Amino acid sequence: MITLKGDNIYLRALEPEDLDFIHTIENDESIWEISNTQTPYSKFLIKQYLEHAHKDIFEVKQLRLVISSYDDVAIGMIDLFDFDFKNKRAGVGILVKEPNDRLKGYGREALKLLINYSFTHLDLHLLYCNISEENDASIKLFSKEGFKQIGLKKDWNHVNGAYKNEYLFQLINK
Image 1: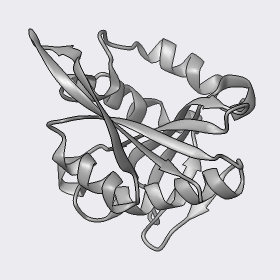
Image 2: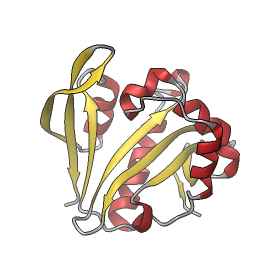
Image 3: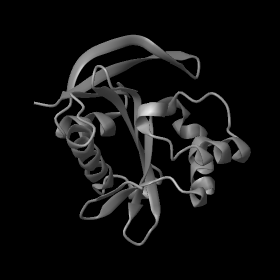
Image 4: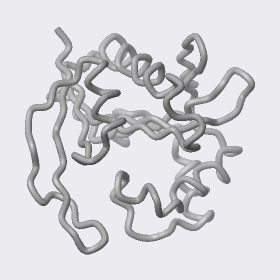
């Protein structure tokens, strides 16, 4: 089990007890835009996912961790996805679930922990993320942690009848 500890939060592996938390996140239409979700997920499908969540990142090409407070309250999730061992890169996604938990530094601390883990334990060379040009909070978060905007994908996502641009950010391990 992976446990990465910070000052205010820690990152941990998914547990069967996270079923309701993940179900709530995956079915929150207000965040479907950032997760590219189009349809609701059943508890049955999420339970199946959790049964396989223990598999190695080298096998499933993804690592999803829960951002947890030290009083064991799940605050959000952070992912490595599209893990590419040959090219030593992965995408990063992060979500702090409740708006009143945002802007408190939890996301930044989680991102720092994941960056360190990715570069020291997984020997990655590069992390990247895709951020809607309207998502100022994520742009600020990733920029503060050294990610550089390297491109703009025009009309990349179709959301509520309109096309939206998306930035590509990356962080190279020096």
